Amino acid sequence: MMTRVGYEKKAQLQLDSWNAQIDVLEAKLKVAEADAKLELEEQLSKLYKVRSDAKTQLEELKSASDEAWEDVKEGYEAAWGDMQSALKEAADRFA
Image (cartoon, rainbow, N blue to C red; front, side, top):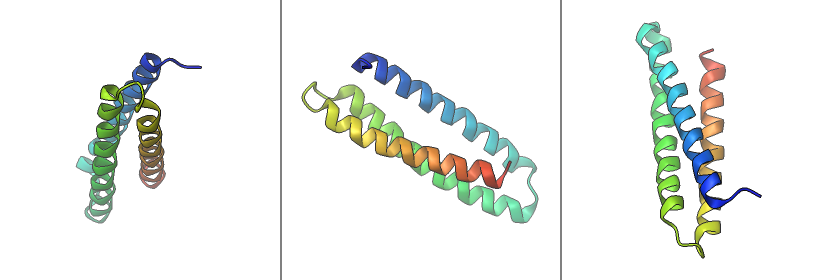
């Protein structure tokens, strides 16, 4: 079983990975055609919101008491799943 510190480090690395994937989509936006640009902007807007939610959950995870940590972890894992789904959708559309 992963320790709390190990879990938090893994979560931070995942957030860093998502940031890199969003950077790739932002680069595609700069060279996209007009109609694709609108759709990509919409996808990025959704990703920014989901990433913000995941980041908030990660901060709550890091600051949670030992008693509340498991509950907060569940919230982070839900945000994590949302982020992975949103990134997959965007990557599939703009591969």
